[in-house]
Length: 262
Ligand code: KIV
Image (cartoon, rainbow, N blue to C red; front, side, top):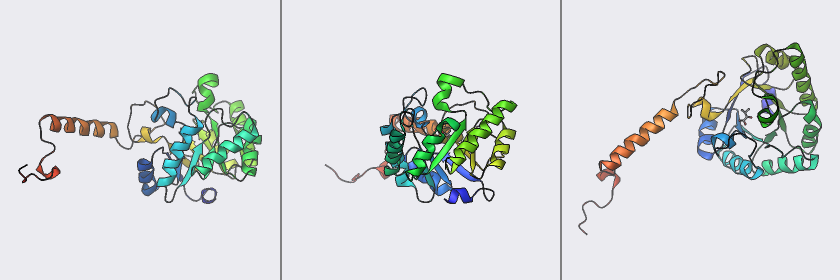
């Protein structure tokens, strides 16, 4: 896979995408990976967490993104409870995402998910791992604090990364892992690490599109905002509202048959 060959050569640029129009722009803009994250549940569907996201919803987002893709790799998240019940179910649900157009699937968990990753890979489906903060369990179990600051936690994350690699995954997301720990993990495994809030030492970076484009307010320290689309969009809607209310829109140039007398 090209993404694996990029390790130690070129940083891997990843952005989340959930719909056709934005995915086409991200692909044309040069993203290497379009991640159809289950963050879609929050930013697209208004859920409070990723927990309620269903396979049907992930399939719909994955289809839209894959129809827009020209160059990038499309990776789709396996949502909560779609890969933990049995290996067969994990393979079946991974296969569904591939049938919807994904090139690979992503699932959360380290050592405890190694067997599941191995089964999906053995079924011919590329898998991306995800350790550090795991949003599907953070809400219920262990919160959103930084991971890998203590020696014990760093060691445990390192073992998770080895387990994911040995299970046959082609890359792994490191979410909110202390930067020195993330760098150490990156240097110690052969598959690329994609960091979010995990410092510059990772092989690539990922951001949620709505965060990086400033489409909503967030105070996440690890997000850099590259645009202020919320302001631009609200400005455009306000101007449109004024134009409609004051009959400045539609003008003659946006109307038809102005010279006809009915
Ligand atoms: O769901 C998602 O968007 C993700 C990224 C933040 C890594 O898993």
